[in-house]
Length: 500
Ligand code: GLY
Ligand code: MN
Image (cartoon, rainbow, N blue to C red; front, side):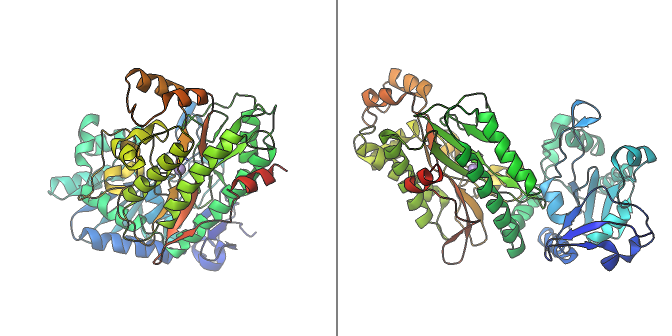
């Protein structure tokens, strides 16, 4: 009997029988219960070779995969999400694997346990750990409980063991055990050298990765269109969330982060979906697909609930769009994203002055930070396998440099996730907005804060306005930038036409 086992090598983008390329599995008689979506194995060989080069002969690199995480009882788990750095170097989208790279000997080992018959009965079968490892050209595999011996042996002989910052409690617990230390002290073992080396590779997207991201953004566009076209008075926000999930699932994808689909667009990351949409208000929709290779999109559009925007909505929409277009025109290698952010803020302040919400000199207003009444966050962030790409590795390393350090106290700038000089190969978001937050108005007005720049009387007539954000995703190219994915309407007329 022939076994059926699907491997998707993204560089070819065709499901192919493993027999064609992996005779090791020839005698198996099973139907695998998951697709393994992989780039060609050479991609992983090259990535690990470069990592080894960048670290030099300096002990072990320990890369932890994730395990299933229980939701409300042990056997009821959250959807599995592999660690992105593990995926980057080892590709295998399977729980409970960990890898070691010995930079002194070149040895590479994947640690994992074979399925028990109970696992197979309940969740189906998989190739063996060794068979999976061979798909990414790793020849050595060991049982999971052997990791601790590798780590101990290295530590006893005074060798470095480089780890990335753990963000999952279960991985923190494992590391505490393997390093024979307390949970609180695990952070002390994190290796800035490894963090820097991983970021240096992952931050520059290869053509294969860009192709994956392009696909993910195009699926995100279709999700947006489904939401916007179904937005109408009387519908519940959660019904629109369902539309986004439907399109994602129909494309063998899922949402890369919880949908922000809200008529209260002033709340930057609200996940409440219980409101009924009302004529005259707007809907802010911030959603992104994560495709089967775990690359994602992150798009935002703001549309009227009814057919048309109101005059006030149109005015502020144009201000946000002008700020966005200005920011996009500045995208190119060598420009600091912090400067693009500040230029986008200046455009916002300019426009807000035109509609009498701000006053005084816009440049002085931005210098003082007064624009943060309307735009409290950053202009954008890196995008990749993670929506805020590599944020687990630390913003100071991902979005900033030793020369340009992140502001940690200035309202507005402290939420700018990306400030550093752009390089060809970066993928990032541009997402300016205007958010009218009544609590912030009350707080600052009571303090008479920025009274030279903010027209509080006018602003108080906008208290129930909500928020507007427009967001697209860009690849930085040698000459400038390239929009990822298919075009998603973004002008006022284009958005209204979608409601037609
Ligand atoms: N789309 C969510 C965010 O950028 O934070
Ligand atoms: Mn975003």
